[in-house]
Length: 146
Image (cartoon, rainbow, N blue to C red; front, side, top):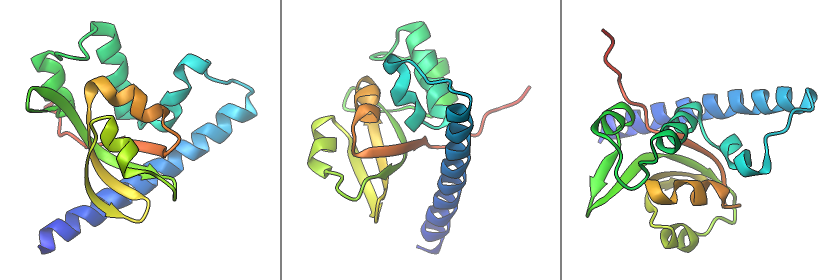
């Protein structure tokens, strides 16, 4: 139980630090008058790792069946034939659990507006486009270095 609490606090701290860095990055972008295209606006709510995953899935067109390399690289899990990415979501105060579940999201722990989630890959973009989500951080994966 102690280990779970410690892990939860560590994840929350990483999430908050990443969220703060992302806000500073957004401020810098808006000062430069550089706006993302409307088509890619949802990416501003995604952590750098999640953006990388989305770009890799787009590049390989493997949203429904990611390669073994992508599964290993991003820690993608498979449940009941669907592929999921786990992470932490920062939500609005009015966020609807029902709306999230309609998109296939599995909701774990909720601590105020910070929720642990597992999101089906084929719903990832739709979840990021939801007004209920303000930021989404994917779980960290330890990568091997050669």
